[in-house]
Image (cartoon, rainbow, N blue to C red):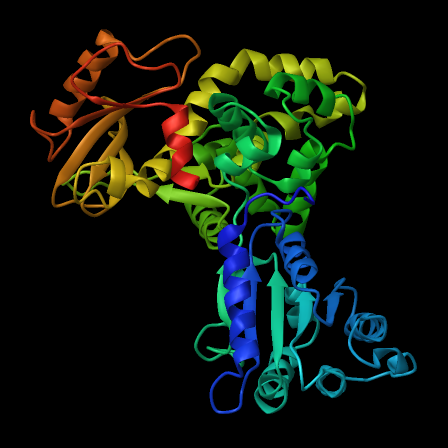
Length: 472
């Protein structure tokens, strides 16, 4: 066993595409392409490496560096010459001057009698360096690669660019299958670290499911033990991953990064975000929020009920960045001075309140995944409800559709505290909130999600153990 955890769905999709290549396809075109996108450091390249290792096929794996077209062309030829493709070593002296010539050269060394794999990693760099790259790729695929038994794997961390590659009007439109690689989920984290369910959720909120962080997390170690270790090393993945991710996502958009920081520090409404970001104008805030939304960095949410609402709230969508922006980024100077203990103490002082809010979107995602098995019929959307004054603020609302529902299917509360079960006072508060929710009535089912069990009857209660089954 090589320690590779999770990714059953993603590996299955790659295997099915390879099966299509092996079967010969239709009309004499066995070649297939897949466009893989996902946040930086979620393990996209590692996933493909695992796929290649399991299948042991002739392949070339090229990673663009984004310096210049000439530099990446030379790197591509060097990787091709050192690959496991037949007779590829004879390419060492080749020096194509364009991607059209380089991809034509590639096609000459792909076997026609057995499957092979071509991987181009960090492809958005190539798109930015050369306006003709997409056209050259489309031409090579249509005329040569699709006629060979090859799986072309195109990987990118710039999510917006990768999404555009397969849209109408772009050269590669409808030529590749799209795959999104998310971070490892809480069940994967539990398996990888050998942690009980409640501690696995804590580890997920800290790491965001990023493999690079989880790989340095000692097996069986609780969150506080890991944080003490990580905050003693300025080079730990917990510290450096956030800064590198933001630098790559926002090389020039300083204003968007400032707005992201304001949301990461806890501001949720348009007005307060603009104020915390330096009294930005509404136009500047909107422009930044639109950019953050397109890059899947920030989620905009509205209350879920049978009544329309304009009370939009914003949150950092990536769990790791949410933690990093709240605690780690501001604490890096202290860690570099050898005072990681101060950062750890700051996390301890705010952890309970911060975790209670940060875990809610994770719980809603879990509930949506188990809706067919554990929630009332027609629960197709799981969200929350709030008013401008937060009276009430309801953690969980299930409905048949969103954001404006026809029918509310359940109302729930999250109590995510150690050794404090969901009790009769919590139930009374939930009943009161249900009466204030548009579309709910006394017949609407109630749900409790508790880290430490429930001590009352008359409602469904879910615990960390049951939530983990959403990803099992």
